[in-house]
Figure 1 (tube, helix red, strand yellow):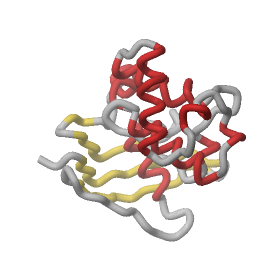
Figure 2: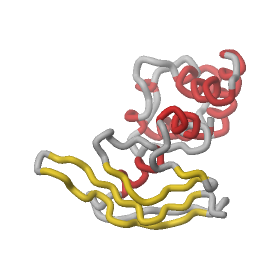
Figure 3: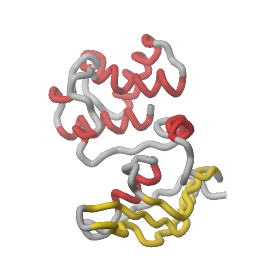
Figure 4: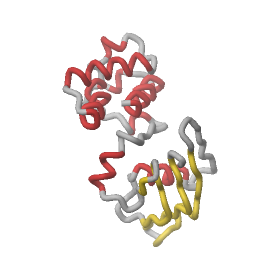
Length: 168
């Protein structure tokens, strides 16, 4: 069974000009250990496809087809169940890291949050694991940077922090 299986995914969005078919029948699968690249022209539906995998589409979006993660259907899954999967079983690393990082919270808090929510770690345990993850993704002098804010990192370092959050 594939890790991720998308069949005949169609996504309709409401626009000022009326309904628009953003994605028209895309299908793909991903086995454990495989990497999949989704490429295409600007506006062809790459981002909206990936957002649908995460259950992050606008409430007005109409989704048909099937998205299965380890055999579990995600299309139509209640938000409470999707929250248990999002960040725990499936994550996203945004191209522009400042869209994923909150400027008013420290890096320790942001990397530690999914560890506390999904793995039940206490605050201090989450902080230690966050430090380990920042080291793992190559943040220099990670121990002294845990209490820094996103604007205190370079763009490349912010992307690494996004990767650490996805790993968390």
